Image (tube, rainbow, N blue to C red):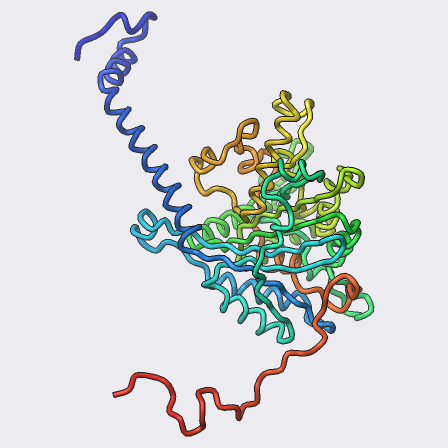
Amino acid sequence: MPFIPSLYPLAFPYPIQFVLNWFLAYWWLWAFLALLALAFNVWMAYIQEYFKKKTSTWIMLEMHIPREMTQTPRAMDQVFSAIHAVRNSASDLEERYWDGEVPQWFSFEAVSFGGEIHFYLFIPQIRRKHVEAAFYAMYPDIQFTEVPEDYIGRLPATAMELYEKGYRMFGNELLLSQNPVYPIRTYLDFESVAEEKEVDPIGPLLETLSRIDPREHLWVQILARPKVDEFIGAFKREGEEEINKIREEGRFVRGPSGAPVIDPETGFPLYSIPSPGQVEKMKAINRKIGKPVFDVVIRYMYFSPPELFSMSFGRRSIFFAMNQYASEDFNKFSHNVFAWTLAKIWYSPYIFPRRRAAARREWLYAKYRGREMHPETWFQTVLKMRLFHWGFRPRNPPRGLSPALSTEELATLFHPPTKLVLTGPLIKRVEARRVGPPATLPIYGEEDEKLPGIRE
């Protein structure tokens, strides 16, 4: 291979010169491999979007709560476990790379129109029977009706049109402040032996949704995608590693510098008993990784006329309701400051704050309306970039982690409110109980009619 001295203005050692010369001589190969990788990412982004939008029809169901709801969030824990069991994933190369199959997700939404609260489920059509069966098994008196028109149609299709109509908005996503293997406080922490001391953990959220003016809107959506087997194993291993780390921290008596204290008589480190806090952490992590886990995106949107709009209420309303589940020893929710619709000159990247705020509003509003999970690949993130809002930080925020919540935690955040919550004037409740048909009622016509099937 000839040496080209003009390519190396500096005096590199011969091995480096040889490698550079070899690299430049085969530039066409590296260009081909780069284009091949780009083409592969373009294809995967296209086929996965096709799978999500064309092969899955989505429907919206409104959940009607009976007047006397006695089931606790434990029942909703079982509902989420059943939903997790019907997860899908690509099982072979054809399904992964040709069909573009990705795990389907579900949206559980609590929205308030001027203080009137509604519960909605936005789910794939093919999962309707599974989801309804899971609910009816735990909540026999609950009712679902299919909503012909999505409630988001009450407002304009874009944030720009919304502002032209005289409205203002604030939106954000919530993250976990610690490693996702640490749980938040769940309904188990709110239970009490004495019935008069029982509380419903969804109460503060409903009160927040009800405390708005008739001209305001406050929407919350919890997108939940079941972790598939290949990621469940990785999540469990991460939890076990964290447990081992805590165990190692509490194994020895440590001095001011953090190093183990050596017993002068034996020359070995002094062992200690794990503190009660360390034991509780290990138990909490072990309980979480032992349950089915979902990848979760929590978004909320606040809309109001200019004369009523309060940025403080928009920022802190849902955050206040969600952080009743906070535990300083375990985990809590935090703001995703790189996704919210607020931008100032004091915030990175410090330029064009109004344009950045407008771009963030369009980005988050479109995400909410489309019930979009975070992109699966970096290339999909690039495709969804907007001018003045590039979209990298909301997917991989440096000071927070996208929530991975167990069925126990999800059941705490979203469940039919019990009779402990005084929501009579706030939620339209079902006045009559659901009763099944009598056992003697013929199903296939007359009693002597043969059952349907293949006939000779």
